[in-house]
Length: 287
Ligand SMILES: [Zn+2]
Image (cartoon, rainbow, N blue to C red; front, side, top):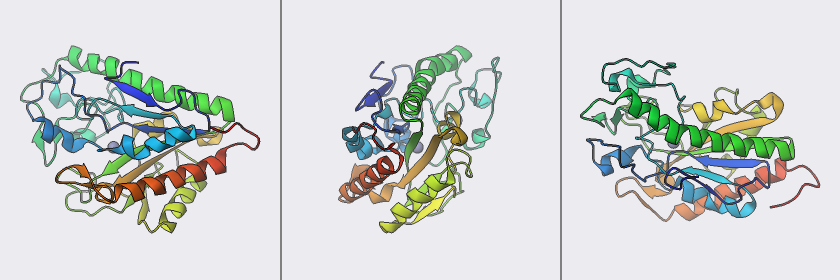
């Protein structure tokens, strides 16, 4: 594994049914990015500190897969063929094409826009450049996640994948919900009940609501590719997206953590402990 691309923190083999991943907290900028927007602007798309927020889970036998590259370079939470044709040199993509509609927001596999609609590039990308990003970044990230989920499921007969994100306090001009919408403290996404047992979503919602957080489900974020790709609730493979509001743990202007970080982290670790208690088979090993 190339540590400039991804890191699996904690146990390399799951010691409980839980697997965590943080696809959007990376900020190692690849040398061939060649973006026109500056680094500060490009980091607007980042789920800042989400890997750090969940790191104590790794002391509980739970692996945490963390992308190291920025989401604006390539978004692993997209299908590999979700190509925005407006980015390409001649507007033509010769391989399989699975557009998600995110190109309207400039947020397909390779983002075109960031922040309030600023163009990321002042150039077009070649087909080979896009293919190389998929091969070097998307494929290994997905292979690592699939491997961890498969290993948890093989060992315990059930897997619980938490896909960890954060969101701005208020949606921007190119936000999913449209501009100026204040987000709840936490938004859970199970793609309308299709990526995990609805009882899992309810369990997580009730635990977090019990801690005083406002929690919404599938509103406005339902989850995208990473909760879809390897979930199969009927077979005991559960994936749930968790978006936490940045204002709970960081200053969105300075992008530094603030005093709320520790409390949110403690509450999230209580969630991890509760899920271990709920899904760990009786008599199983403990991490
Ligand atoms: Zn995210």
